[in-house]
Length: 586
Image (cartoon, rainbow, N blue to C red):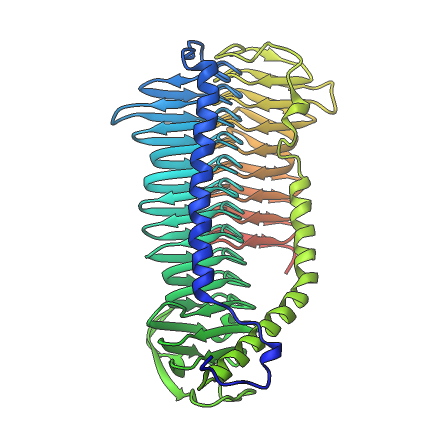
């Protein structure tokens, strides 16, 4: 070896970029092969059973086309599990469209394909499917597109509901929007244009790749994410915490948004980082790799940031302040040129600390230092992350329709299209599973303290009324919307535009609005917590509660009037925009 011997070589952990890249390429190749084989296997096996058995039943009925192939110029699966486990759901032609609006209506399908748009609007409507191929895919129901092997769009991808695209693989020729709480958590996203993570924890632990812009503007939007992009914008509080970022440009202005995170110039000739004092957070690191020219601008200072300069790289660091005439993220003027030629720490002038390498030996020493630093950070974060996971677990414990097998129907009365239209229903189980199955119906569970109302089909209970001392689950698109009365102990609105525009006061104990536009346009009175955790959930509403209000979706609670006895949380981009808020908790 031509490398000089270093006294600390026996402690080194040396990373090999070529090996890592080769492994990464091989991993991607294996993933694609596995997905293709999975699609072929499911389609082949299902085809043997159903290739000549196209569905002739009504997909507006519950289970109407379950396990059967569905093919039509325009496909509408509106009943509960109406097209679930299908070998193929195909809409051909330029104006082809697939609508999966009932709860679990297209779940576990092998293939959903159309030349135009796919709408997964019901709760778990396209969950666990193998492949979705379309021009535009809109996943607006809670968990509507979770755990899908591959979603391919020619133009746009929208993930607006709670956990709507969780752990899915997404390839978009244009843009991808993750707007709901946890909407793209753990997802793999590859987009040719911008990727917008605008909901709270919307891209938590996601793998993001784009030659364009990634914007993380919700609270903890890209925490623990791995991001490769041309430009990365971190505007939400803690938006890039623990993230690993490779980019040409990074802007960080959200509070604590870079805490425990790393920005690297690996495989890039230039890197520009602009970070404010409050954004630098704790133990954040910028690494300027060999062959790169890196510029770091600290707006108002960034003493808690550390800059690593490897051998063969150059770094320019400055401290600036906003110009008097500028607002927001406007122009700045340089006040200090920082020393970027020597190793130093504990600065008092607003400059970051530095580690500078001038040799292979010092590079290896820095790699050892970074390995130790990461281990210390990981240990420090362990307790914090355990506490956060406990909080997430409590959120999951809310009954978002967990265990569908536990609510298999005992009666068959309202499972078909319009089957209970305009009827009076006083059963303790009101099961509205078909398309508009209980449209215009009056549901009055006055004698039962544990009644259940199931609005699982598209438009189920629309223009009707709900009066229950138990729980209302409004999982279909437009379910429980435009009703004359809505009284319930607990209500969960997880279908697209579910529970919107109730004619009177929506009188509930606790309320979860976790799908795009759910609960919007309402007068809500609650004794418990109100959660508006999806894109534009609870928009233009009047909300009164003795407890807390969470507005954690993109523009959640926008233009609303909120009066709360507990805290009001507005953490996503646009959340509480133009809202009037009064809280008894300061």
